[in-house]
Length: 565
Image (cartoon, rainbow, N blue to C red; front, side, top):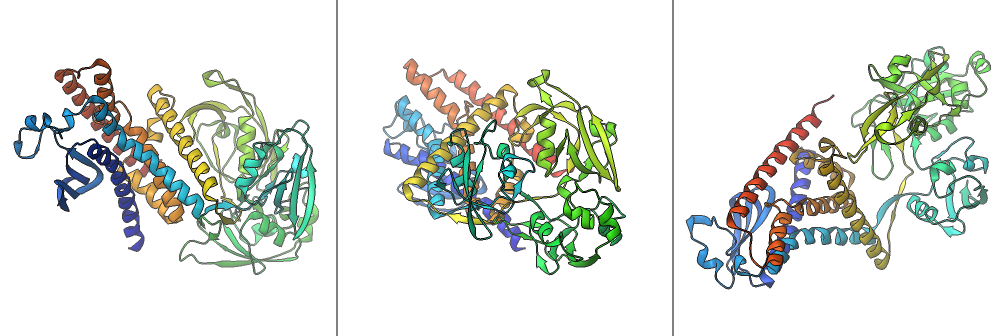
């Protein structure tokens, strides 16, 4: 019950704040230019309650999905059928003001929706941003980092002499380091250590090229051989391990460290999806039953296991679910080649796999060319199925897909999905001095505004998918509730990003939006006279139809998101 209340309350507060800020911009500029304001409403529809002060009705209305400011002389359909012609000609009427003044009033709302994120981001950076610690959660075998001697769980303390504390620090320093050898200061088991990553032929600004990352596989297991100690003990694919021999484990690295060199293995586990908290902690679902299984070492199994396999698999037959195939799309390249759910991917094109990210990277590397003309070469895949190592030679399909933002792109695709979650290092709260916070807030605000404006352009040109980019009331509620569940910082950040979206969309040249109104006043200012009444009426009607179509469209998109594929 409480979560449901928070679900709706967090969204209503967010919408209320954004509408209040937006309409406040119109209100302040209108009043400063001498325009009378009759109504300042948060929400549409019937008036619920409010106060009347200074000739303005400040009200809360019944439908909490927007708001408006009704200015004197600006509404040809005034309440009660009152003719506004005399008001329009009066000194405080909106339409009596010069075109530049009406243009300024129209732009004031979106402007405030841009200012709000800057203020919010500044406050968040001063207050403290949760950031991943500068701990290496993954090091790819044979990578430049591995060759240099860097290990999983090493804590990075400096890069080329520049101190770092969080993963964000590392990325920012790497962005500006010169090409060449990279000196890395580490702390391992509490002791300082200095190593050098050779930069010859390596992009030292790219963590992936260096071979390390801050995401580690979760403790979800894959049992690819029923004859292994894990298989004989009844363990199955998808179980989440919480303890090894009484010690809590959070990532696959923890599990491997605790389980690889023992002759008796007591595992605590549960079925289901973990609760991944924003601070990096991993909790079982509420009310789940924790079960225990004990494994004993089997010398016949360990002696017969291939030496090149992971030590944890050689001893117990346990593998990370991050390289397990959980689904194969019917008719896809993987399906045609014979890959099945439950297969354990081992090698692609001679590269030993560490995570599903390696799978995606190597499949993407098979492509050449751009757009519809892109082609892909065949890839060689080695996997294990029920203890048998199998080799496949697969020709990927080249398909048109969308990225996380909804933008279209072409890519090689096999048509199989992986399992397992990625766990980030535990987070710390990083606070910034006010000048630095202001700078970072400005960069965030301008970057997001530029990105959203470019993405709107892609929607217009068909370079992005409408159904992946637009959401209606249901999607707004879902995203806002998800942000609220993560904490106040993430909810406030979501509000700031949503405010920028509101500003960008409001500036579209659609007559019922601020951008459309601003365009008409700009044209009037340039021409020296207003557009004809007939033209304005037609534009307004077209704008209403356009917005009605968009509303129906996003509502359909929301419903489709709720229906499983």
